[in-house]
Length: 332
Image 1 (cartoon, rainbow, N blue to C red):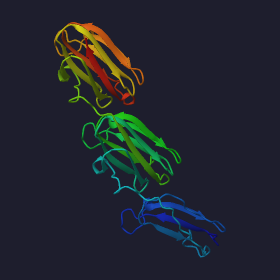
Image 2 (tube, rainbow, N blue to C red; image 1 turned 45 degrees about the vertical axis):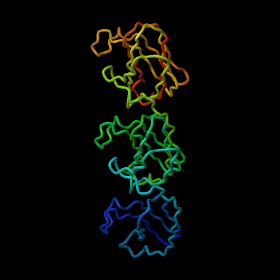
Image 3 (cartoon, rainbow, N blue to C red; image 1 turned 135 degrees about the vertical axis):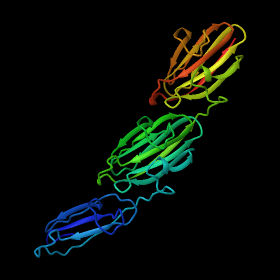
Image 4 (cartoon, one colour; image 1 turned 60 degrees about the horizontal axis):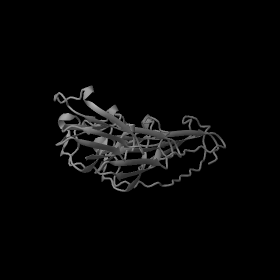
């Protein structure tokens, strides 16, 4: 409140617990003159802090002042069962994601990173939304592709940033597996970007119906045997699994119908015959190529000789074209 002379107020966190005030432990400092009301307004993590008042000119006898100090807080309680970790190895494991989960916590100068570990039991759409921000924050979706416990540049699948009042979000289609959500205060070295947040996670599953995951090439193609009648297969292609191969056999000549539908994003389908039997796809061995996208299925209708053929489903090999799909096959 109103000062009689100049005075300074500091907010301090004894980060190393040594009982001394280091330069990096003064979180905020402001000064006021006669008649001023210097103040500090910020967002803080739960913990112990110190408020330091001094007369700014500690060696002078001319700057004595009385003061009134007012302290207040408005709580935003954390709702996580424990504090989310600082890296992949210490990430808060929330287990299998079903329905919608919401977590509230803090990132800032005293706790720069929050990591959550989540498992998707099925392929499907995934949503992560960050709300109730007081300052800038960033959300990243990560897949530890090589399993080394470190975040490589190619393992950050999506990243988006929001400011106070924004609701940055990630909406995508993901393959079943383990993922990490990383929240940080965007400017880790600044004391001015502390923020509480609410994180909402949800998934809508599209379970795979194949007996196993289709392979990534001709040699590992999922063998669906002798083709007869009509069959459907549901699975995923995208950044983490860019190719699905199916192998089938026609006992007799016939008319083949293939349909690639229920796409979330772009997807393509090739009909292949390995004419020279070398296990590689040569340009002249791709008999048909058709592409579709959300709301627009791709189809192939053709007459074939008896023999062995392959169906190749793929996306455009980037994060933005992840898609689940339904492949329908029939022969007459």
